[in-house]
Image (cartoon, rainbow, N blue to C red; front, side):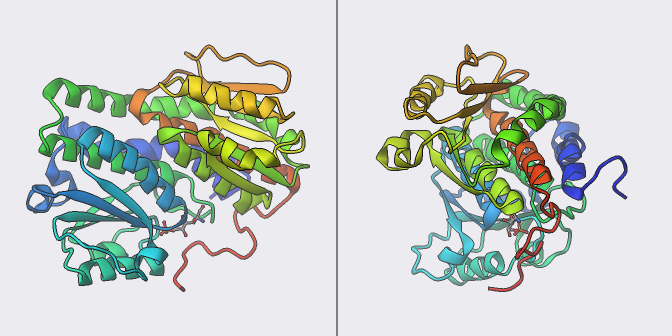
Length: 366
Ligand code: M6R
């Protein structure tokens, strides 16, 4: 079953070009973003919505955080993202015209299921489940469903489920943007084209594996690591930190890079490797000045950027470049290196990569 791979996690990381291609197949075939992608009566549910509420846990929650940047920036709809176990126990203000989106790889996560029931009990009936397991509990309880087609995910650390959730969420964003009258034909064609090229870009990112393997020796002896990102890449920093702590047991934290000076900078020494997600976007100059703050305290920087950036390695600054900046889909590409980093660090530390201690693949308890 593992083929040439040593672990399911490694296999699942490498399956991502295929998983992404399968998940967007319907959109590519249709050549357009349409409500029907989300079910036969989806137009009725999606039209006239006034906002989006995303409910999820763990990695799925970080996919939701990424989507908030897209939904507000591209579709122009207010979007909030909440950890399911928090939402279900607070007195939330509900709007029946909110689209409630649950994200769950397994479709069986109890916290997310209960949050969905609670959202419905507040009169929010416009529900969409983005899920990887057909006919699981959460899609069955939802009015609309979009299945990610990652295939079975065995490794406890979620990888291909996350990137396919992101492409599903981007598809949702573009569909909502169209319904809101914010996406013209040329813009739609550009997004379709970007999706069509995405599996190839994911494969390019996977080809960085030898360089990332070389970095793992720096991390393996450490007990702490910091991940930084800004904007739509901040959730990717969170995802990188979660992957590292989950499978290597290194304590890892993620911060929006601009927040460093408000506290976490006090932790930085040469014993604290700092991973930075720094693609060549409008925030790059800001991220660079945040990196200088780290270097000035002796912190070692490990930077993931892309070929277009004018970023160069120097003393204490290690750089790995993805092939090119892929615009709005960039967070998907920058997920690959942080997955590979966690995997290779765990290998050096000799942990049980596919079954990390204390964790279950599907969390069906509170
Ligand atoms: O099946 P779900 O997407 O609902 O699972 C949610 C989390 O339990 C899950 O993403 C967890 O955080 C992963 N082990 C992270 O790699």
